[in-house]
Image (cartoon, rainbow, N blue to C red; front, side):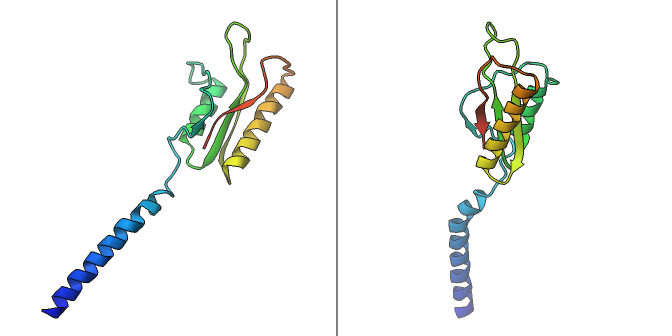
Length: 124
């Protein structure tokens, strides 16, 4: 009779321990599919082959720390949009820094002076 009682108590304790530790295990889940911290919604073209649309979709699909930076887009004033992204960086801060540098490099490459500065649109 005693072994059954001890087994039941041990099973109950293990079940309680599992319930307590289960939420902390879930915090290490993948970031894939998450839009993360959205600072502003980027205006994306409907063409899935557009480079900025592809970069944003890759950002959302990434499982690690990532960031998406873009210039502001106003259809009446600006005819273009420049973007940059960093996928699966070691940290969120590193992803944001690299995405901003990528966007600014695009502005320098195409010698763009109008359209606003590059800003982080979303990061996770």
